[in-house]
Amino acid sequence: MTKPEKLIVDGKRLDGRGLNELRPIRFKAGVLKRADGSCYLEFGGNKVMAAVYGPREVHPRHLQNASRAIVRYRYNMAAFSVEERKRPGPDRRSIEISKVSREALESVIMQELYPRSAIDIFVEILQADAGTRVAGINAASVALADAGIPMRCLVSACAVGKVDGELVLDLNKDEDNYGQADLPVAMNQFGEITLCQMDGHMTEEEFGRALDMAIEGCKKLHQMQRQALIEKYGEMVSPAEEAHADGGEANE
Ligand code: ADP
Image (tube, rainbow, N blue to C red; front, side):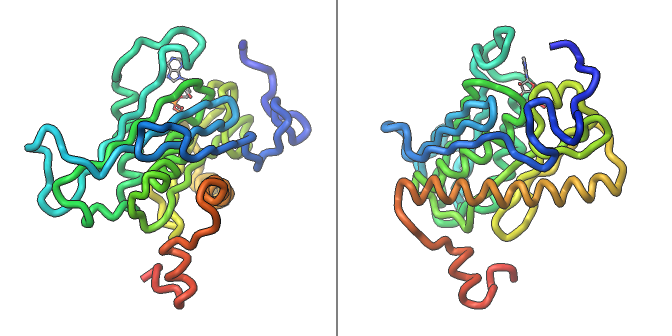
């Protein structure tokens, strides 16, 4: 697509969304038989599969940690996920995304319960339409819960961008291409930010507002992730909610 003259017309974006609206999102937990946990996610035009194995033995053994499980995260874009065929295999971008996504999730995984083991997370981008790293983190978080990995809470993620000088939630591909900034954010249920990257430029004031919008977006995603797990397992209470009910010790 060539650059449109305007990406926002009368307060609406070209795909019809308001400025503070997420794309249509659908999670499905537990879709793969051979993985310990999995999640399929459609996030606007993104189609993502996450699979989790573990805790399991670490190979090669010298990577073992005697006091905690190691977490490995592999983000991969399928060759057919983008318009022009993507060259298969890791590249600088996928190595970076794998690293920051692992860090976004690690803080909620109770790694200390499984010394010398590994928790492996695989995220396959089947179709990409901007925001694949945040989509991957959302799907991986549900897949970890589906695998029964003990977690303090879920992690949710979404991006806020700047388009035609306005802050907008959850950029699509055209907005990502022709916008002025992109701020992917991940947050856990305690409100702790576990990923915050930025492409482009925003003023300090815009950054503050963008972060607030991202936090609200993450809260909506958390509800959808929770709903996907309820659909599979029925109602449950997370350690975070239990602690909250006991007097909010979770935040200490
Ligand atoms: P994110 O997907 O997290 O927003 P980027 O900002 O790096 O990450 O990428 C934005 C979008 O650009 C991707 O979602 C994808 O649609 C597209 N893209 C990324 N890498 C490639 C590539 N190698 N070939 C074609 N399109 C790509």
